[in-house]
Length: 87
Image 1 (tube, one colour):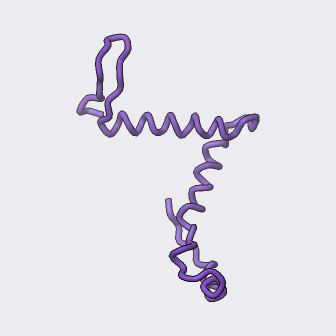
Image 2 (cartoon, helix red, strand yellow):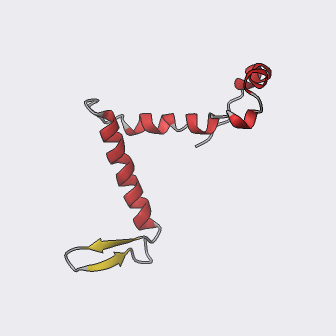
């Protein structure tokens, strides 16, 4: 989810003069992740948004883990399991 943003180029000469090489202070890639945090809290009651975001990201990570062939412990059968090939 990266979208090029070019407004910073207007300020680039001043930034290089003040802070040195550009590679040391570019944050554009990480700033676009703020939108992901905002989306994760849309359905929040805003009483504890960081808790709700963590729960959302944990659930997404669990789905990704299973979908990519990860293993989990099945306490009922006392064995390690993974998703089938059809996933």
